[in-house]
Length: 354
Length: 100
Image (cartoon, rainbow over all chains, first blue to last red; front, side):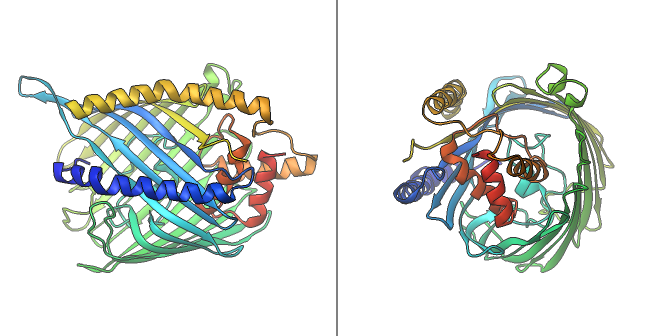
């Protein structure tokens, strides 16, 4: 997460200004054509998180803005960025704190709605493998501050791809719907748009009446060591309940693992606007399996089990407090992870529009 | 440390200003047009279908925003159509639900 000073200078001098110019251009184009409901928006989250991992505490102020600018009836330009500055006590008896600023784009993509069943995506986009990266990674959505241990499996370590993607709805009825996403990513060593040469895709079936989704993902890394990644996910949210179950399993040539997350809104006992009804207990179980060493895959070096216990509280005005305790068991040592955070979600138009 | 101080100041300012911006937007919206919210559609059938689709698709990942300007409802739905691979029919129904 930390970056070198040269990269920071590069961001400040090249990438960020280029991004701003690009966004302003997109928004300007959108302004020419936006009907009443299609004004570009700015959304995202701003928060402050603390994490105590094996006794070492890190403080993380973070802001993650999202821009979406429609152009005409078929194009959408969207981007999400993240700026954070993790800092922690210097230690060794020295006063003060140490840390480093990180800012970068999570994705920057142009979408073209070609037909009812196909949308072309070009640029840097979140790799469509399983569900976490695309759906739950925004800080204002995820129940836990930490991503699952297996998040880098199938997403080629960077979570983003640079190239093209075709995605859309195959069909949708009242009882079942199917969707797909296939992509190709070029190798990119640009510091801002880092990606590996890879291809893959994901297919999902969703049964709305049962609120059940099952999906399968496949990815193939096409540079250095060519290897395959496979994944499946199951989401279930029983109708008329406040219970949600989400799960993923993924494996590659050198490691695999799964996570299962369950949460329950206490709004079922009390009104959702009441003090009790705003609580949301969350539990996540994770396990990783190491079949051979790979220091670059982002997973723990040894087989690991981790249980996460969380309690979220949803304040009015789009503010949420997240707390969690995790216990990690591994042959390299067990440890406790305590996290707290507060996140404010914002969403507003860029201008008044016509 | 200097850059961190600047960032912290900016974050604190953003936290303080954004709710004010949101309130101002909501206030402006309320005086000019009905705010987009999870409310009644023009007919019960439209409302039921849009609300059902919203619960079946959007609410699986995130809570609905408490309110937002109707000027961005089309942008929100287009973004979600791509992200959630909604069908065109479902996109229209949810948009109608958000903007009765």
